[in-house]
Length: 401
Image (tube, rainbow, N blue to C red; front, top):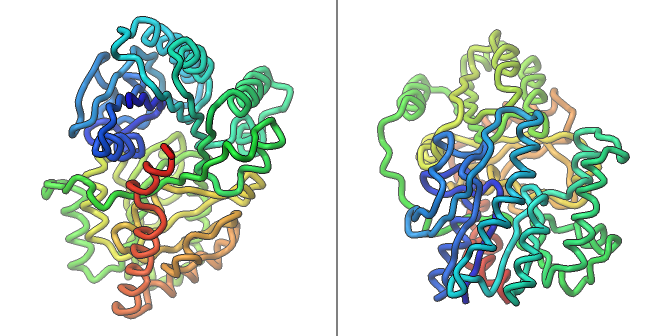
């Protein structure tokens, strides 16, 4: 079967930091399918500031990069980039030779603006179409960003959402509790498939040994510091200001014993860096290649993440960063409240309620004071839980059943 996986923010080795598209494509190829990942030649999650337009093969997976509008931040050019992807995708699909037309199109809604283009061409090709829901649009705009329900973009996204739920042969959700919401907008429940983010037992091995981040981690280790690691975006949805709030509640001596390593970028990077100036225990490294992140995770003591306390999480969470921590058998500190509770389910760390900086600081202290054997057991429980429930081989198979 020929499968086309369309993701406006596709990543992979030497492409970008979110590798779901790559992992799924590789599993489907191993099962005998022909797979092409389609993505813009530029998006803000790419490692090197963009890719050349056209076909490319990255670590054995076929990609097709379409011409794209470059942008920075969340302004008008980013919206233009999203909308233009709908046109470039349509033009690309129209020109496909007959022998390259897919039997199945999967549209992953990092944003859904180009879904109608995929739907129209799926119908013309006689192909099946699946809609993969990463975030609930436009609900995320309304409940997270505070955009008015009367905003034209909200109206447009709502129309596309309803169309996708009704017209798709299947709807794949990364959020376990989203079916009721989708059904209220026209999805037939039998079309719903829960297929979360995951990890791969056969991820490409990192050969990176020399990098400033890795050198600094060795120095922190030599200094006897307990290293907490965060790898992810630094934007408003990522709530990292709440982490900074917690630093004020750490005991004075903790700033000499703990090290918080922050890897990532986003529109709040500069403000977070400014707020952390008084705290010498915090180090920022910007965005680095995923292979370096994976190597770094082998050299730290624990991972952490924080989230806002928002109604949108009543549908669940599926965090790449959390699965990366668990895959490396790291214990985890998390501040969140959601439909699902993966850290508690796995027994792999400590959780506190969001918006409780004092509790978060206490969790950091408790984790750092835990003996090494208990930390190892926490991490191993997380990896076992991940292996049994979130391995990409099983997820890829589930999507195609």
